[in-house]
Length: 345
Image 1 (cartoon, rainbow, N blue to C red):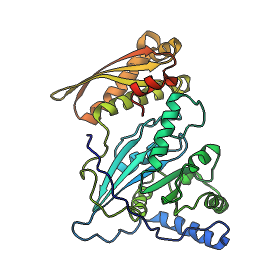
Image 2: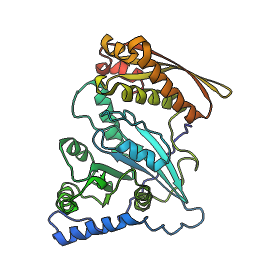
Image 3: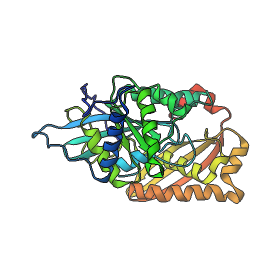
Image 4: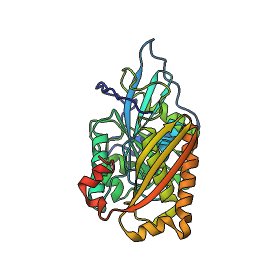
């Protein structure tokens, strides 16, 4: 599933419309809002097919505060689950790359961890370095925020955006807005905070919104060869995905009881024909956390393993034999060496 990444060529993108400058007349901003809302009813018009041999390809960073819907958006764009999700904040911890090739254009989406504003430990410093590195090495940024909302956590991420990289303001969960007359003042305040190229109201669960987003992103991508094969969906290995899927089930089945610093390490990943043999260890910081995961008579750990195994079998298309242990490593999340040992940048 993994592949070597070619270095993208540098190319400047030209927005299709002039952004609203701070202090510009309200009617211009109202027109921007009206155009964005009217476009939600139909897909973006298909771009003119490039000449034979002319391909577009570019990196698109998906950024935003923790738990704003970035991973759900990435999975919808790719058309398959490549990034885990849960109601627990700070689920995504790695730079996850998902690809989608449509006609002559290849979209390389980069899902990033939510920027951490609390717990200044080694783990969170690593996650923040991942976010900063991603936004400075892409052709387009999609800044995800809940429609009508903006708080300190959003502001921390917004402050990271390079001024010269085109950025789209994606107002997610727009379907939850009941009084849309309030969106215009909110949009005006957002445009004053950053020079956004476009405003895109949408829901990551709306198929038409997803298709429209492809058309919007396409014009910002440079003309250059594809970085990946047309049928590739992610640059992450099966081994990596196994650890992520186990961690997802861990968070979903323990809820808010378990500290987010728990992680998963794959000790062994072997293939024998159509069978995968996987040995994994869940790392926690305290003995009490270990008991919480194992549960009474081992039932909680058994359920985590069963749900993870079923999803891994869907992913690999074969049988999976999965063993999971739980170990205590006190203070690992604030130990730079261990953070790197457990696979964090």
